[in-house]
Image 1 (cartoon, one colour):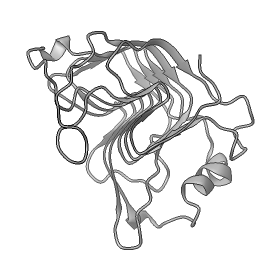
Image 2: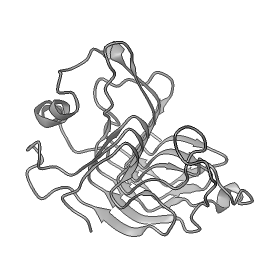
Image 3: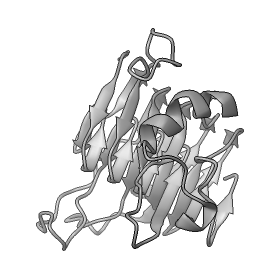
Length: 231
């Protein structure tokens, strides 16, 4: 168990690791023991891209400013992982992991069902689109999910996501004050694509079964521009 978590980064950000190449099982990230209404008292993980309560991702995305050499997907699925910390970011954000299975994989012979999945994982931390746009652009957020933001292949089974325990009053008291110190932006300043209670986006024969989700998936002023769902 890990408690009193304060993690801040940019790309590939998580409580246990930013980029996972090993085995992640039976790990719990707990809410702070302090009053969560204290701005400095809550557990959180915040970043911009590939942000998760346990890990940011399991593959590096080829191209851009990141490394381009291929790495290999972990052989083991993610089992019995839980998160209570508040997670915020802009691209590929999840309660357990930001993204899984997307990137430059040297072991491309694996079938979709052989890729690591999420089994009996749970999230009760808020998932917040927390990257603010400047005065000349819109804040575009993509792939936000209660368990994983973006999942390619594998299974998601037996997972639950409560999507945060905060009330609207709590958000007014501390969440919005931290994420948006300059005040609220109007709704036209935010767009969200691919937002889900369990996964923001699944592809490559990814199978979701026996999962449950309740609660909201994002900060109030983020609205789904393209696709939003409970699963």
